[in-house]
Length: 252
Image 1 (tube, rainbow, N blue to C red):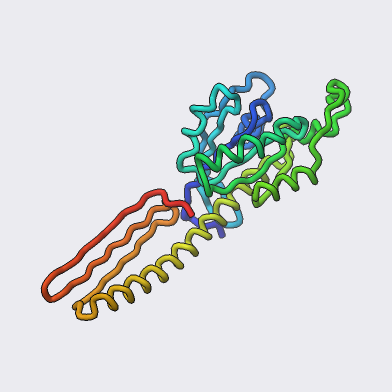
Image 2: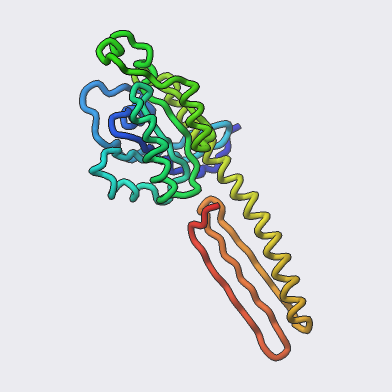
């Protein structure tokens, strides 16, 4: 039975212009391949999705890959839970730019946020008419895509075709799955921090202030909002020391 609790996941697509990011989003959200007008950037979309028994509210954000948008594009990265790094299987340049441009950009603006790698336009890789019209074109192979996945440390590599709708759903299922894995890892690390810091601080204060009447240390975290806070209160017969701090958007 699917969970009734809905977790929000912000998924942002990035990659060179004209690799098919917008078509992929339109295909996923409408089950249709756009044949007439294709916008430069897809309108933000949100819907409840169930993946492996977990209900999530998936927010999809499109970005424009052209250089004209280099200054505006990073504004979409804030709060992202997962990125879909897209390149075209019939564009060697877009494949190479994943490592040259997109990974460095995400490391700069959204360090630590996980990503899945996606090869688009799978139907064109073996389309004889398309290849005949583009002499000298050498499509990206599955093994080359998998090798790039290993290089950038992505958990998943998916090849898809928006025109045939093959594997489009698998792209976003993989993105959701990767985001949930990352958040579960955050939970584990937060628990470790709680135990370690709590133990260390109490022992340290007890050693420095052996005559203190009490020492209370509280550590609270909201993993899915990636916020955590701590509060230290030491009571002595002659004085009291209190210290608290709150940190937001701490990524691990």
